[in-house]
Image (cartoon, rainbow, N blue to C red; front, top):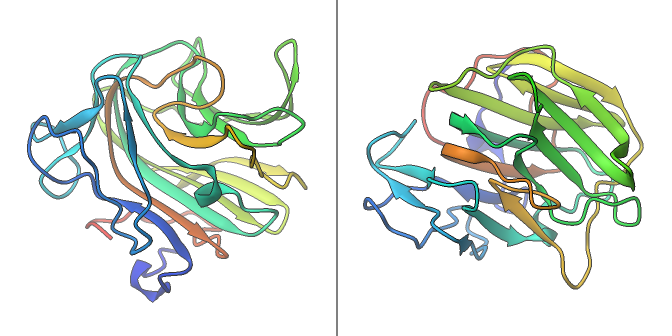
Amino acid sequence: MLINPYVYTSTSVKFLGHFDGTNGATAFVDSSGNNVTITTVDTAQLSTSIKKFGTASLYLPAATAYTTIPSTVANFAGKDFCIELWVYLITKNGFGNILGHNIASTSYVGFNLQWDYSTNKIRFLSGYQGAGIWAVDAMSAIDVLLNAWSHIAITRQGQILRVFINGVKAIEVNSAATLWAESNSSYFSIGAGSGNNRFGVGYIDEVRIIEGNAVYTTDFTPPTSPF
């Protein structure tokens, strides 16, 4: 079921990135009303050539390019939430992170959503314990196609974490993880996550973070217009 995005109050929509603007621009705007600061890293920029909605999208032309927002925007402390976005992948960067906390260790229990190294599936990871071991490590049952827009939604309903790809449930796991990564050096990345693993080359559009509501709990039709 697709929930009307406009039913949410400004306090529940923590971040809304339309990534609209002029080609090549490197200043991005949060449209949630919370004036979240978006920091540009390396060559991350707007592109008007490929976008899902609006006038542009976030273009990551190299594996070193990404953006960050304060970790407080995505520190849910066990609350329900929904993070959704559109991705257009051209070249995958190995175990590249689509988004996530830069600190995702057991101490902070942040999370990363990343590409699987050898397939076009994605993994939800939380609570890194060292030696490649995570407290939560779940792989999608669905591929994300290259050179095409795909809608991805990460949701939490109680202790049930789900990842949907193009409206179809691809991951479901029961976890009590708080998904909290607050520290003096933590942030939440779009196009990156913990470690040095980045998105790769491609585009991201229409990123929305909601706290307090999972929004999607069963298969749904992805949005057909901007929020």
